Image (cartoon, rainbow, N blue to C red; front, side, top):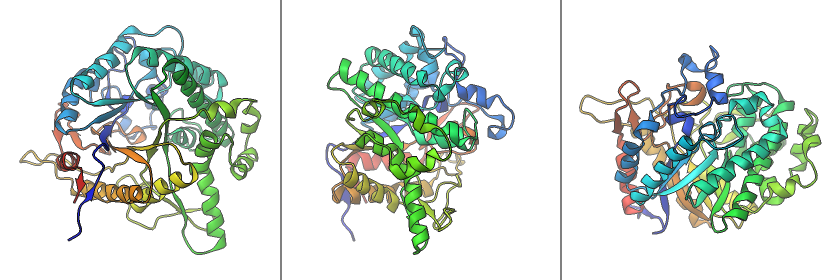
Length: 440
């Protein structure tokens, strides 16, 4: 029998959520509308016409959810702050009731001995900023820095994440139209990309200037790319895809430049390069203190650049189950972009599950997925990857963006009618891993 994989004693175990996916209360206490409120209101945009209006009602039930976090023995809770709660129009003086909610949340974590990690932007851009051009408008990056300063000054939080998955905003929001704001335009998408990265850099500078000793970095969803066959064409296509999936976001942050091959490809499709002003890349490459790595799926491509699925897929059809990809991307980041500690800030699986007659939620497939990915992460750490923590996605079942409530990623089941929380078998399994520090 193999000996268990043991994690360092100071390894930080946590869970992640996002404001629009769990909070609900979208019109309470001065919160302004976001692009996701607008997107959900358009028939056909979201499965079953769902929205985040009620979600998991975390805004009112946060104490119950903090108790769940404590009961699982977690050392960290990664949540996001809803920009429209802090600045209902995306600029101007802060909304005190919005700040007070997050103060109560942070205080509640402190009372339970749990370390907060806050994400400043998890896709819920104030609608008024979108009306002025959204992320295509350079001014949005400046507004983001002002919003970040308000949050930094108001909340006693040591670890901050700037932008959650800028690539998803670019691809799903601007290239494919499946997420807010719902555009299908490569030219606009990559202008937005540059301004998202600029916003990250501006906010990072603000934190370093005003609160030395705190840490900040982006949360990037990284997809290791592989050739689907042993041909030169597939290898070249995989390298190109890697540019769009990974290097486009990692290179400017770590190296102060965009990858030449990727920027050339983008420049054939739109004016992104015209929006890169003198000094921008210096801002974007403001040294980061931590890198949030989010891993769900690899991308295999053939010689034509088409995605090929080579392993089992999840309920979320884009998610190909390949734990080795987490090992590979962590080792690769350590090799190509060394010097900054990594935290896995999202990793998880949507499973069709429900509460059985005996009150249990049996989600063995999720447990297998988590076990295999934690094992892959442990092997990456043994190979030298500087990983200091792991956050499962997600603490709670929630609003899964364009899929509405049809996909459940939580380790805690939520009955959306009664808002009853029921920890799943995976929650108890994870609790045992956290307590023992071992993976058996």
